[in-house]
Length: 340
Figure 1 (tube, rainbow, N blue to C red):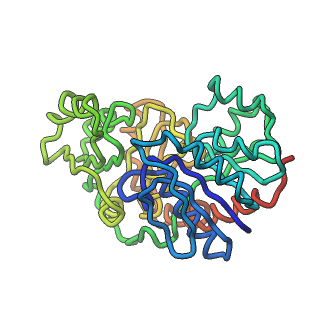
Figure 2: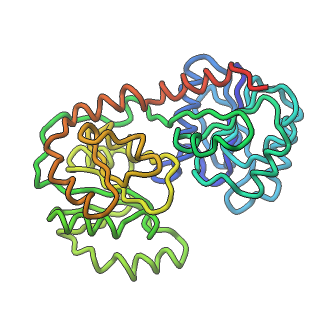
């Protein structure tokens, strides 16, 4: 099949330490190309794609004035079997009422905006609206349109599971963009209540208010011994960190469509501890690949149960459900199923 992938031109491909959406699309394109499909990417001007994938630049983070026009012109002049959009819904406008197979993946959870309802009123043909989690599809069931879901996946060999015992004295870890919404302060509370060390990994934002939040709220809590901040980590550093961590904490406050870090953790055999909401409700099987609760106190109490978890089972769940191969297979099923 001739397949087009469209991504907002925010971060160049391949993404390294940030860019969760871009990483998922990158893995998907790799799988599709390796299966013999003709894949084209429309994305950030500075992107570098793998051999065999075609690339069409559409702008940069600071220059998106002509992004819509570039995409529309390309869609009008080129025919694809599948248009898979990960960006703005308006990108689909030139093909909205024709029979071209169209998939729109939502990498966010809050969908019910005025602009989205206006789009739904256009009654697009052969379009499947496809969140990256079942919980988003379920809460959107009252909306018109053809809905499905495909969960994100990672390459099987991206992270290695060391399959060795982790001491109960090992630290807890949180990996997230540094800010209030990611539950960093809650992770500190969980570590203190459970009398465990905590490693905080992630990028501090470039905006003044993000730097100010770190300086005012988190910097003084990091003593370098019990609570350590180590900054952003790449895949190799993340693999080492998660294989040696007691658990990954994700006490996020804002809604999470699909938290990729949770499957990165399981790929390394590391259990996940999070609130019982958003994508974590469907992902975490208590006592199998992590624990969930409704309060900081409940999450802290679950730390004492981590010895019950078989870390090899965490890896097994990743291999069975959350690989890039599985993700590509599920998308291909949608590609060939019409939604007229």
